[in-house]
Image 1: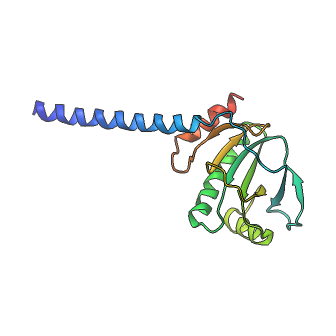
Image 2: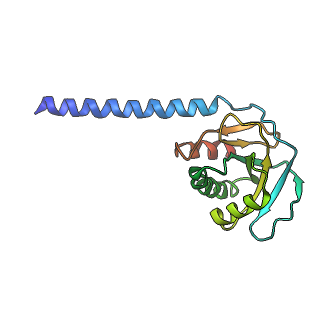
Image 3: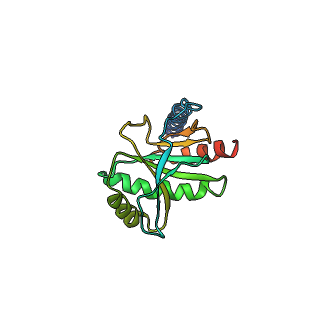
Length: 169
């Protein structure tokens, strides 16, 4: 009986250590890109659910940005878009921040249709560029330097890192 308890306790401890090390490794990898400068075009198209899209291109504001590189042909990307946009709504309660989608899709009407269908209510800047970013999700400061990165849809514990780093800015 004592041996069985020792085995169970050992297995539990090993699993907890593996979980901790895995989490630490993911956070370390996400932090490795901090302070890198991300090059984004100066202009983006502004999409708002409350109005018809007029094809206007505006200069991107100097606010903080939550950037999501999205493939509009990917079903999982739409599910992630909902989660990321909901998290964005949490972030704007902390600091003035814009939500930007980076994509290579050229059809504004297609983008507007998909955003309306997926999000319902939104305000989003869409940056069209062919050059792929290294990661899918970035939190950038006013100078487009990386504050935090990492896919918090896969690793929900990264949300705390995003919030902590944004509050410390």
